[in-house]
Figure 1 (tube, rainbow, N blue to C red):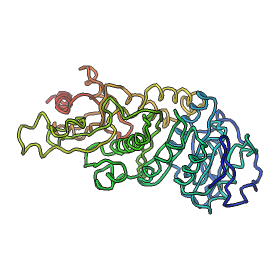
Figure 2: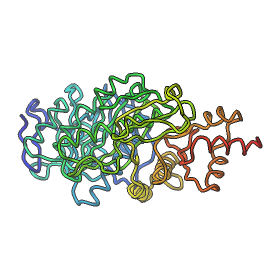
Figure 3: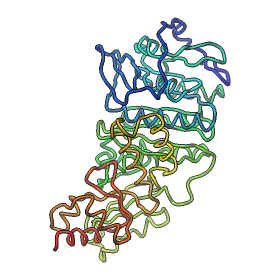
Figure 4: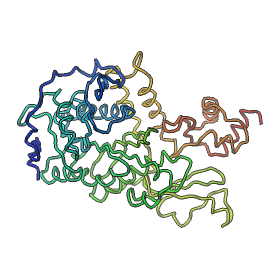
Length: 429
């Protein structure tokens, strides 16, 4: 077991070389960073102005946006609480750990990776920040399986403010209980899934074992990927007497990657029925949330017979509530603007994403999204433009926004029949 105390974590006992840190010049403040990921010498990358080596570790350039979101959220925590201790449970080459130290101003980061062959790369990268010793120690490197390091921290009562679980497939579900146990109250967990097969309903029994949700094919599969990830976290937290709520949920097509930031506090399952089932009707295209006490009464208004009921598809239990906190997204957007990550000459990617998440935070919007190609197919018209159909929906009093998950889809409280009628009206049908 690792030797821990309430404020610091000792170097890994598995390798005494943890004290042999090469010196590198310190790096600049976030305000001076460029806003792209660029390649330098072989195996060297620059991200937001930070130079680091990836060695032979697994690294995705495309995940830079997910790292940006993590850095922003950790920085907001530091500004709010005045302290920030981060556990990067699967740190890879250590770039996230380095960015938490430099950009989020973390007081201490524990960079853990189960593969000890990555040690030199991690040490070289983190050495850009002076390590210090004792209670002022800024960082440490360990090489344990994620559940072990999380459990060791819990047993030593060495709790963290922010835990990053950047795992592969649906593995993060196996680490959540240990992560919640080693997290401070009101702390944050940044979880990951890359299991697109489960979200697409292609492996329902796998999703049942990993996330506690039996998932069937539905048109908004990638949003289901976020919702089963949140739902699995809700379930694991409730076992320990905790309540978690999502602050933001991010989907990226590469991988695919599903990332969710959760805040943990004491409490029970949500009382607003945000944890339940989703029903989709292949016949009419409408979706509805189903509570636990209504499971034996599932029907769609368009179905009047037992035969028609076969068109209904049900997935769950999963998270049916909001994917983002609008107030929190606004704080992230404001901080990104202060750092020069959005706005003039900063590129449009991150700004576009955060603003779209802000639109999706409208409390009137239900779960799921409607693909305009499906609307056009049902209406037997050409596909309407997003701007045109959203303008028409707003004029009729409906809530509508674009989806950050699917580029040619909208989120709206207008039923499919209304969308079909509007599409026909747009094309003069």
